[in-house]
Structures are given as C-alpha cells and as structure tokens.
Length: 224
Image (tube, rainbow, N blue to C red; front, side):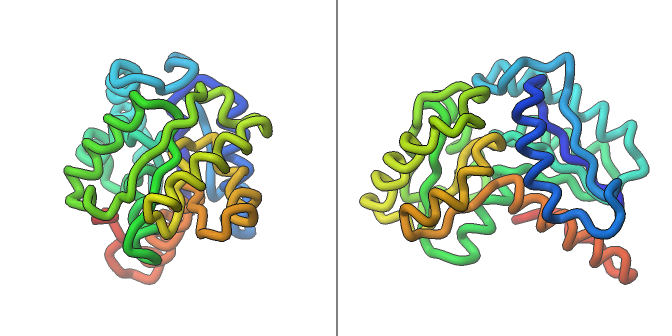
C-alpha cells in the first residue's frame, strides 16, 4: 500500500498534526502512508487565491507520483482535486468531500466548523457541486488562521461553534480544517455529537480503496 497525504501549505505544525492522525491507519509497514507538505506553498490556505496557487503544484505532484495507490489533498477546500484526478491513474481524495460524505452516511444533517467567513463561501461551492447543500445545517467560523487551528487554545472556540450548529439542527459536526483533527475526541466528549476529523475520514476511505484494489477489484475512486 502506498498512500500519499499532501498538506498543501508550508506549515510544518499542520503537517505534524496530519501525520499524527495518519499514524492510526498505518499497517505493519510504517512507509505505507507518507505525509508531506509543499515548501513553496503559502503558510496556510486562507483564500481562493491561495487555493488557486497550489492547484497546479498538486496536479504536477499527482502526475509525477505514478507509484501511488491513492493521494489525499489535506485541505478542507479541496484545492486542485479535479486536476489531480485528471493527472493520476489512482484515486484522489479531498478531505472536504470525504468528511462530509462520512458524516452524511451517519446522520441526515451535519454542520461544519470553519476557520473563517471567507472559507465558508469556498466550501459551499463544493456542497452545491456535490448536490448536498440542503443537508448542511450550516457553517460557523471560529476566526482563526490555519496555524492557530493546531493550538489547544482553539478548543473553546470550536466548542462554541459546535453548540451553535447543534442549535441549528446539526446531528454531527465536521472539523473544517486539517489542523483541527486532534481536537475531535475532546470536542465529541464535550458536545455529545459525532465529530468528524476530515483527515481521518479521507485516510480511512483511501486505505479501504487500496485494500479493495489489492483483492483484484476496481479501487473506489470517488466519494460521490
């Protein structure tokens, strides 16, 4: 199994958080799931311009790495995912798509905890494209930078946002940034609702796809 998870920013703290999530999915071989970042990328994906900037970097990487069983783009806005899917002969997963479909497989309506108001607009373009916008109870921004999402001080803001979304009818909560994942267990305990770590959701699907392909069956290629 060879799965590559790409943090499409240059923040090593976020890359470390992603790698910690991936560790639970690694089988006997420690090299089965590799986690990297993009040194020439912005420090965080915090605008459409940032997302557009990294898209060609990701597409080139997908085309160059012909040895993979799967590629995960670990940014909730799923930058460059369509281009990567054109370039790669293997499945490509965006953590935004993967986390929402994981949540909606469990509940009828889910809410998203976003980093910023500007991120919400990017996300809703994805939800409308996928035809699931009506099942998103809402998104609430916590007004943090990507670098701050990793910090333990972010937890009270995430909890407050989760409470707002539950009041709006969210039956599950989705963490809208790759760096937030390590808060999932504490937040689920505090709020009493399923909390979806987007990196874990995408990694679980990528591993399942690779195992399916190893049995001689066609790999799972898309979430929707």
